[in-house]
Length: 266
Image (cartoon, rainbow, N blue to C red):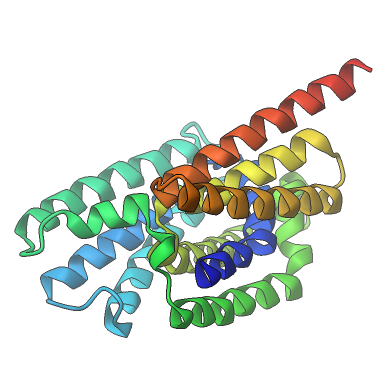
């Protein structure tokens, strides 16, 4: 249980921070789309008989993720008749369909795709944890250095356009970093958990607070509570780990929204 617990504690800060950006940009399903692009890359790697944990498979997955990031960044316009969320949905569906076709030709069948969907954090290894720590730390430092640019584009997009910022370039860097995180964590925990960790705590933080920093702290607290509690429940009750953690987050989200409703009524 020690290393799965460490994996759960890796997620809070960076994923909540990225989740707040995602919610403000109103691109809720972008992480699933990016994770699906990473899975598509993994399917391509399988066709070339690459082990899914090999550096080559990771490079292929990351390459497909960057393609998705480029599509989303160039699809964003100051005013557009087609919402970016629609483009994200189309990319997700197409990537999922192509993945199914590729898996039908792969000798290993659909098992890897199922594993990526539900995850199995109980099987995480010390090597997985330390590699993930290093890569997440690099992404966190990158976002800290350029936090003003990312925050301006996410929180005040009109101001970013007026200032003449290279919005599409910064969008690509945001999607690239988000895609790197998704590619890393999908290999550890699966798509369902990555989406839950990214969106649910950030949504709870936005429900309970107004300031970005306070939302981040609340989201981190919910992430730690939900991850640790869900992991122990899955262990004690012999439940699938990914589903147990997701359901625990669902309960915490209901509680947070009820608290927010009570506070507003007062």
